[in-house]
Image (cartoon, rainbow, N blue to C red; front, top):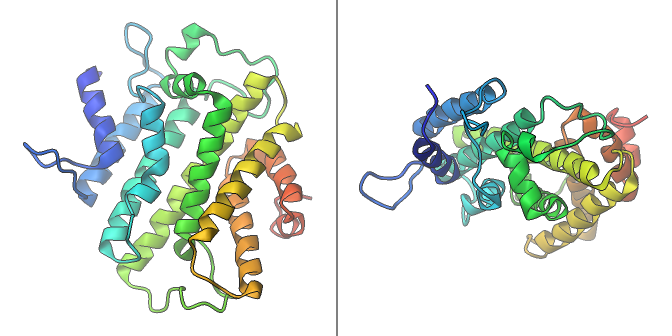
Length: 292
């Protein structure tokens, strides 16, 4: 059966903040409840590709950009002052499920469109009724939404770099030594979260190209992503532990590569190639087969 809007709102709250103690305003981390809720909500979103409400609205989606931004920021907000251990793993689990939900909402709403091209795409007001996530991005401003998505993805990458990146050739004491079960969970959830955030960047970049009536190969969309990424990277590194210049150079190059690798959608390949040239990692992209 189609869930009423009140249940949709409660499910969105759970996706954003986790379960709430009954009769209380306190949220807490419960991996089992979060996993079950995530499976149900993702199933609901997938059903939205086949079913709509009587008024043509989608079965599930955000009510505004505020919902989207909470999902984008979970990997930072839900892991504040956490370095490792079970609590960090639980925070990253919530963030990974939220990021997956956001990516799924966008890709499901747009699955009737050819994302490899932006020519002849029109998103009229009637079709947008069944696209609450796309509609929220457009209402906020697609350029602003793209900037925000890139900034929050960059924050996630830098904050959780020890879990996301291979630290093998860095002379650092921040790498993982003997991996515990919590460490493995942190690594899995951080990587999943980053990939879903990168997918969201790809889709909003496509929306930007549609709005500006340009193709994905147009360098202007890559310039916007590049500027937002490098500016946020510089801000994040100001608060990062000090390292020698040799290590810092390696670390920054790795961050650039992992950011580009997070742009996982195949249709985004032209943007990735342009970005690689702009931020100086075109040779590394060629080595991993992302560009010719």
